[in-house]
Length: 462
Length: 87
Image (cartoon, rainbow over all chains, first blue to last red; front, side):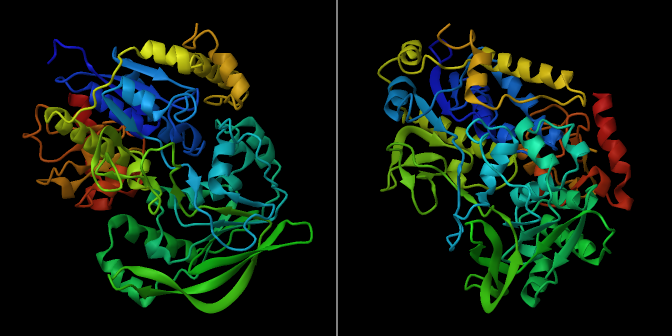
């Protein structure tokens, strides 16, 4: 088949899953694929750019692996093109043999409790996007005159939020944190940050390195409340994986530590669920009412939290919720409302009756939900690519009506930013970083106008 | 600090870590020469980005963060690094 034209694949979403799938498809010798990677933003890398915390530059350096993929002659990037806005699902299927959605899960799960919309109550995702300079969130108003903060959730995002709030100005100054966020974070008055988990230490979803970092912060002591394992968890500990066991060890160490008089305290509080955000007369949050929980075994043996009917209040003038994410339905792409994901079976997009919609696939968080670390998506994409190859071999393949993608872009998305356009943005950002007094890796362009301007001359139109 | 593959991998070479390594820094992979000859896999300390994916994937708990390697397996830090100097 190598003497015929390559099969055309559109991948929508230039985060890790999209890049891994692109690299994997381009590595296939027979049949050959040509890959167009689309993104809504003029910038690539998805959550590596706008999610991974700015004080984790080594993790962000994963992009070097993605840049290798872009050097392939059959790779193209079309940034600043929105599926469902600029181009439709139908248009993609009319032009590509394979359409792969790697859209991620951008909607935060809400707590579903009274007071959630008080001022000072935020989705952690908004805050993360804000400090990372995402152009949709650069205008977020976060009042860091607050003294006490509650972060609801027991995963790495909750830890990232807490740590970013606790960083010293000198620690921030060497990062690519957005300028607008550095300004606000430096002036912070925060004294207490409570990470609130409904279950216990064994059930927490932190990774070990993230948890360990909390113990070595320049400005913050750690404290643990309700960190003792209940009887059921103590038994489950024996069978738990290494990451969970180590989490318990680390938290035990934190619980035993004396306070050293640092200006901030980061407190892990386990076994409590928020039931209401309490407001003051000005409509601002002033506290979180929580119900204390006990661990109980479900019928399937898994351990869950159950309310005990005992309540107390945690004073807080800022609350971030970080309890999970769901995908955003786009157009008429089959959407599984219950799971909050594109309806799929093992990466094949399926109708609600379970039949495969030929030519459409998913990978990453929009396929399996928001779990795992960056590398988890490499295997996830490989699994989907394997399905694509099976389908191609079996002749289950979409037959696009047109191969004129240039015309599609020219008509529907002439603003598209090419890879050279991103490189122009990148050059401006990294030059500004080098010119900064603290040698920052980059100074991000954080609004749409500046990003468009930087890529001008490198967009599809020109 | 780079991650290190240690003793428990010997004779296992399960490759779950290779599948999830985001920067392809674990070698040899099953389709690379020399795979059959090595007793265990290695992490390239120059390329590793400290992301923890391999730790979570390893079914035999053979991977450690550089500063978390147990005393009795410290020699594997050098063994991992040396593998990439030789090649």
